[in-house]
Amino acid sequence: MTDPETLSVTIVDGYVDEPAHFGVPPYISTYPRYAAGALVDAGVPRERITYHTIDGLRDEPDRWRDVDEADLMIYLGGMTVPGKYVGGTPAEPDEVRKLAWTAGGTSLMGGPVKFGVGDENAGATETERQDLDFDFVAKGDVEAAVFDLVESGLEGFNNRMRDIDEVSRWARDGAFIVEHHPNHPEYLIAELETSRGCAYRCSFCTEPLYGNPSFRPPETVVGEVDALSDCGVKHFRVGRQADILAYGGDGEAPNPDALRELYGGIREVAPDLETLHLDNMNPITIVEWPEESREGIRIIAEHNTPGDTAAFGLESADPIVQAENNLNVSADECFEAVKIVNEEAGWRPGGSRDPRPSDRAGGVPVDAARRLPKLLPGINLLHGLKGEREETYERNLEFLHRVYDEGYMLRRVNIRQVMSFAGTDMNDTGAEIAIEHKKLFKRYKRQVREEIDNPMLGRVAPPGTVLPDVHLEYHQDGTTFGRQLGTYPLLVGIPGERELGRTIDVAVVDHGYRSVTGVPYPLDLNAASMDELTAIPGVGDRTAGDIVVNRPYESVTDADFGTEVDLEGFATTGPIEPAD
Image (tube, rainbow, N blue to C red):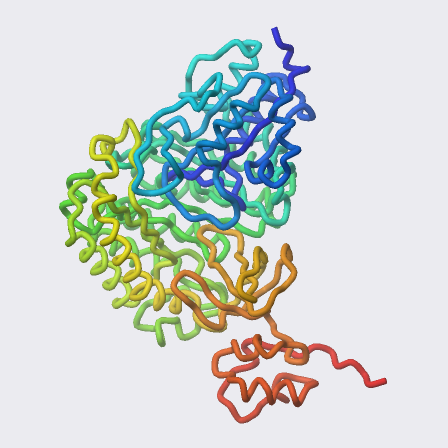
């Protein structure tokens, strides 16, 4: 029998993306943290636990030695919703098989990969359950399997779900694993689980396979944040739940007191946190319990950080698709939920807390501060569902146009094609409809980007909006691209090639469909490049040239060349070096 104290364990994080759980960098999901905590609880010393991301194995092949030499290799991964990723690339099925073949000891696979594997991580695909040549596959909770497997001396385990007491211990005991993530500490956001399971049964979704909602008490989530904070984490997302408003209640109705205890407790144990965002909020909850929901939304907006997004699972504005797929919210109901979130949380720090559409000039509150709104809805639209027809696409566009035309804001519109998993009602239909409608889907997606995303982004982040702490990630075509940490962060393009890995504040100067252009904020007129100066709205080549020729300046007002450009909104003047 293997002694836990002598056991060497390698955890490989292949990243996850689920309807209510995200773990592609810069996010770290709960799975590796809970698995590490279960190992420690079972008696494995921390120093005998090694953690690698799949990108880390790709970048440094020598790390595969840890996979080969470990007594126990644990693979965690699985994509049950399709996406496009910048910070990391999820493991493909062939890579997962290679892990199993390389492992010299016992191999265990777990996470949402248990629901099924396709040929690739993409939408409009069908999946099937596969063991991918692993010794063990956790069909229950992988962290429970980890604990039981170590307790059995690596002989086996019963597939089971962990309980609240276990996850509370493992969440704290496994927080240390974040220190081994390549993004730690500056560019890492920890996904927090408040609950799992769902009260509703949409045809395509894997979340109901976890059962009815079960909630972690606020003090256990707060304790986890405390432990993560002690390990250097300053960015958090309350993302692992189907509906944040239902937290601490009966699974459907809001419980504002539980939200107050949760968010207030997080702020108390991590007073220096830099990001506190969320993910899922069910629009039907807002419609069914409007006053309680308004109170809950106000509590969230008091404690969160700007730029937060509440993902709304409308999925389809077509009543036929709604009926055939057991979707729980209509287009009219979703519109009402969009309106309420805008009213209660669409304010910008330092500006009015009553951002009514009638008060807007060009879509922006007249007295708005220069920050992103505190909390806005995001719309999820899913295609390839049962009953989908050409009219479905028209109805979705009508809904989005209504939101824009009536002056409300959406942080983003997420358009996907369905993935089919065993155990869901979509399993019989599979990806047939999505494949049949691929050309229609591409044309419609482009239409949404041009007609909705572009003007909406100008409303949400107008020129002059300041985005603090933008992490510079990569270069492309002479431009540096970066993002803030948070839920669905804006991609920011900055003229010129800047040192990567740094963090700078940026002022928005223009916007595209899904990204914005920005300049460092404040921009030093005495050092700015021509590209940076001409990016400022209203500053053309001639004015930029005049600014450069007449440098240095003691103040921004000294650079007034008779234009109507508000340079003070973007620029400052650095110290003037004395002449030799």
